[in-house]
Image 1 (tube, rainbow, N blue to C red):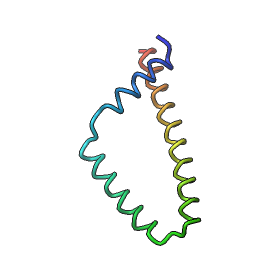
Image 2: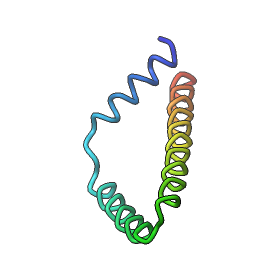
Image 3: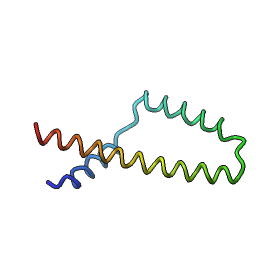
Image 4: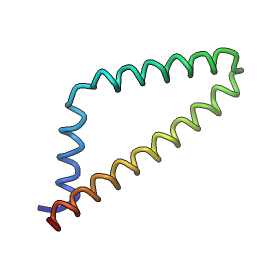
Length: 78
């Protein structure tokens, strides 16, 4: 099976999984801190922040892809 197809299958199955309590708690903390941090932002700063957030999301996506590829390669070697 092609690694890209396998990686996509893994990604899809992962996103179907429910969040753990630990993840939900950490997400809640991050959202609260982010809301507090952003409350006084001007419209221009909001736009800048959203652009930054999009770039961070793309970086995270690349990281997840690399992790999946790494795991697939390790499993194949075993």
